[in-house]
Length: 241
Length: 86
Image (cartoon, rainbow over all chains, first blue to last red; front, side, top):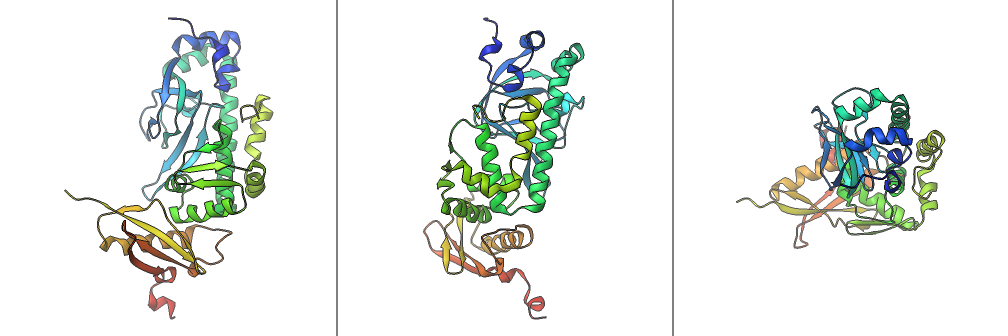
């Protein structure tokens, strides 16, 4: 089988590894599809793999029994399986695919061995963990202080950062789960964003029309975590951004 | 075999009707009112919106798959009457 070339990799973390660090992980990388609603790990079960999305989006969700809501979002800028990087083998959260794509994955044990072998690899992955913590903190801030319209604007911007197209196949039901609210609230918020020309909504689809307007609507709830990512990695969270 | 039915939680706010195109699956028409109360209660107590000054200006107009209105419920029905009149 032809050896996987780093130059064709789209995941930003794998692509920014040094040649030596890439050589350490490369033999263990396995290409896998990301299929909508497929679980990448489940709450309180051993995390078998760390997944590096090439395209598509994964959501880390908290399942409280009273309902489910999103606590973190990962695309080709990051990795799924933060606990493994921190030497913890499971999480109380669940991770599922939100938008179809492709990924490379590596066994949890193999990645831990590779990090033991290379301090620069560990350092790079820990820098991502830091940016992920900032993202999750900003979600807590947005949930505490912002209206549903502002939070929806932020969530659409975050999804748009990770998808490479303006047309996003998302139902109101799904956005309700992600934002921890009931669907009728989302329907009202979508109407508002559509009314000011930021998006166009058709059944099961949201099309981004005016990103700048969406950023204005999201206000300070969006941008802080994204700026921290570019400060840490010296490239923007949004591909081509 | 029991077949779940789909009910659409259309909302009326200050005279304007906001249609629900996705709907919720419920076992029967008797379940609609409980579902509407739970949904309205969740919105009133947990969701802050810029667009809605007061959730108590809203009501649900729930329709079935044929478009027939099966329930019209103002959100203030979430508050029991004994409390509302206190």
